[in-house]
Amino acid sequence: MTQDDAGTGGRTDTAATGAGGRSAQLKHTGLRSGWTTGACATAATTAAYTALLTGDFPDPVTITLPKGQTPAFALATEERSAGAATVGVVKDAGDDPDVTHGALVRATVRLLPPGAGVVFVAGPGVGTVTRPGLPLEVGEPAINPVPRQLMRAHVAEVAGRYGGTGDVEITVSVDDGEEIARSTWNPRLGILGGLSILGTTGVVVPYSCSAWIDSIRRGVDVARAAGRTHVAGCTGSTSEKTVLAVHGLPEDALLDMGDFAGAVLKYIRRHPVDRLTLCGGFAKLSKLAAGHLDLHSARSQVNKAFLAELAAGAGADGTLTTRVAEANTGLEALRLCEAAGVPLGDAVAVRARSEALAVLRGAPVAVDVICIDRAGAVVGRSER
Image 1 (tube, rainbow, N blue to C red):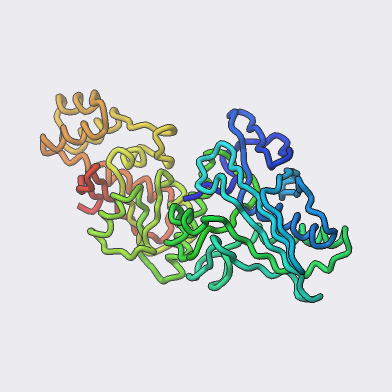
Image 2 (cartoon, rainbow, N blue to C red):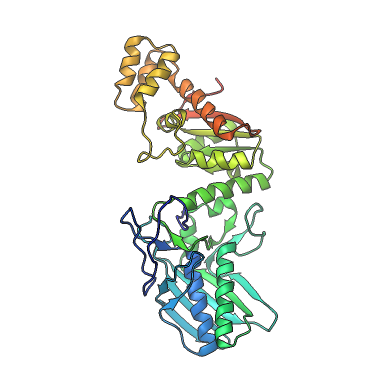
């Protein structure tokens, strides 16, 4: 996964300026924002095209982002040859745990004949789209629409300032991008050979997780385009293995949901599939059962009183109900009930399914829920 985008989470940037693409401080959090790969590619493109038309590389190079910020980026590399120039910019993701932080993003700009327009090419470390369902056609370089628009706008601005035609080929590459991409969703989405050049605002907001949520949405799109009628939202690799064993789904039907149950449900509400399986650890899915759509431990907690209520409804006597309410962890509550023959796991799965259906708001989607323990054993199912 890559956290290479921003625009969610309700946080606000201060003015984003500074040589070297220095990150802005975020109000309310004390964390530094950063710049997307799309912003870095735009900066590199702007500097390379300027050098082609003027003979000089602007360092630092300033660009204008969609929301009006004007960050300045230092050039890490610069090279000029006949009819082409290449610039490299190091990505600074600020304080976000972004797998592309520190990556060297390069843009090579070549002059084309008048009327050719702007042509995009995937260089080393940038992927190519191989499956339908993404916002780019199969065979296109994985340079997303907003970064393309941003690069076109800056090419036009440089052309207008220095007398160019604006007809160029832009090859974007990322050093070690193919290796980095193995830590992202790209292989599963059918983006092969490297990273995607991402960004809708140009700014990375720390811990906004917008890129993960965007990957969930693209995963649904790819599954639908492949004709999948049954998809599964899984909280991790162990739950993925369980779903494969239970339902035998193909890889492109598996959604790496993580903690973002709400993101899966809300997107599928707008883009339905026939069937959705939610699979995850008992404790995480007990949070969904209690009405939480974000399952991260920092934003929702296991409610043992709620588990005690479910246990009582599943047949627990007063003594067991009290023990569940006083349990240290959700897993301890589950084991207490298992020892007494009380199906707390099933009760959590059934309630989680009800919460999921409430979010789906009548969308034509059949839902089942599977709860597992840390070893991947099924401890609760809504269908039992």
